[in-house]
Each structure stands twice: as structure tokens, then as C-alpha cells.
Image (cartoon, rainbow, N blue to C red; front, side, top):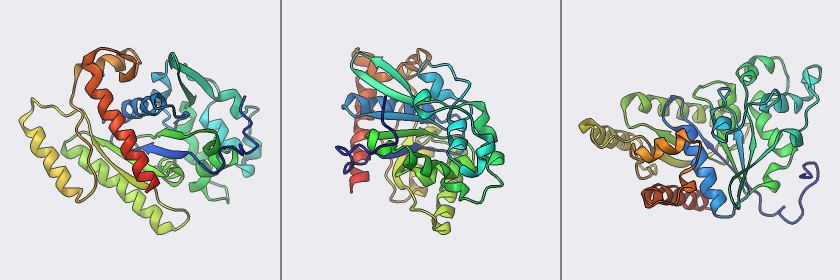
Length: 286
């Protein structure tokens, strides 16, 4: 069991990084990207914690874990002193799920649940900064000193949960499908980041780049749509597009990462995610 209330003196200087994957539009493969990115880090020997902040719990389900009765919502509420009347008898050590994805590859998970959809209403009346609840939760349990990387999957909304994630993250990756609808979703989430900067209550997360996903090479309009979105993003970094490969769908259906397959047809996907981890680490250390 981790000693969450005591600092780990051996790792205190090298604090872990919090990375969120966000887009206001659903269906862009955000959760799949988060899942495979976490595995890419784990394959590099990083100690990884996945934090599911989407009430739908799809991130949790990908780990082949049943959504428990108590989950992230209850831990967040327990971390707010003003909500003592709503506290439940659950500890973080009770909820961290240790998953062995394959031999020698371990990823820890803090699951989500439907109650997270009521998070904004539950904390509406508190005096403490509601935008910083997740950030302070991570600090309280010293999760940065316990893990090298914390990967957060956020909900496809623009509410208080999203604001909390953006305030807690060191950097954000923005998956999108190269079409005009996804373009608007990116604009909406970037506006929230801008609003957080104006609040001046915490530093804003670094933009770690945009991930074109589900790129359909058979659709003639896809290329021009991607080029148009790249143009609107200006000098922002855009990753190599992930094509709509059958291997991606197969791994998702079997609740496996692309790293859990040894056949050559998965090598290119593995390479793309490995490059992503290298880019993220370079950006967060620069």
C-alpha cells in the first residue's frame, strides 16, 4: 500500500506530470487515445496512474474493470472540508485499482462513476475555489510523488469538471476528428483555457498538441478538412494523423492497448504512441 500521506523523499525532486486529453465534442477517440498513451508510458518503465473524470466511465471500462459503488466523485467530495456532511467512509487506498495489462506492465486506475455528473451541483455552495478541487486533491495525496505520469480522461462537456481538469493538468492533448464539427469542439475547449488564464487562480496547462484521429483516407474531403483545421491552429503542433485502421477497432473491442499485440500490423500504431510520449516529455520539461 502506498503511503499517500507521507512524502516519498526519494522522488520528491522529480515530480510526476499530469496530462489530460480533452475535447468538448464526443466521439473523437479521446478515451482510446488516453488508454494507449498510458500504456506507451508504462512500456517505457514509467509509473502510471489513470484518472477517469468522465461520468460515463468508459476509461474505467477499457481496463476491464467494473465501475465500483464508490469512485472519484466520492474521493473529491471527501477532500472538501466544507462538505463534511456528505463525506463517505472510503479511502483513496481502497479505490486505486492495480491493473496488470500484460506481464511486467502495470497501470493504476482511479475509476469514475455516474455520480460525477452531479459534481458541479454538489460543490455549488462552497466558499473554497471550486475550480481547484481536483488540483488540491492531487496535492493532498501527493500523487505526483507517487507516479511519473498521471493521465486524465475528461468528459466531452464544458462544465466545472473540465475546468478542474484544466486547472490540475501540466499539459493537455487535444484529439479531434478532422471535420468541421470537431473544429468547433476544439475552439470551445480552448476558450475555457483562455478563461482560466484570465481568472489568474492557477497556471494554465501547456498545449501539448493536437491529435488528428479516425482519419479516413478513403474520404476525399478528409485531406482538405485536415489542412483547413491545421491552418486555423496556426503554429500549434499537430501530430501525425491516426488513420481509421481496423487494428484500432479490434484492440478497442477486446479492451486491449495496441501494445498488447505482437504482430507487425500493430507496429505503426505503437510507433505513433511512442513518438507521442517522447514529444510530451520533451514539451513538459522544456
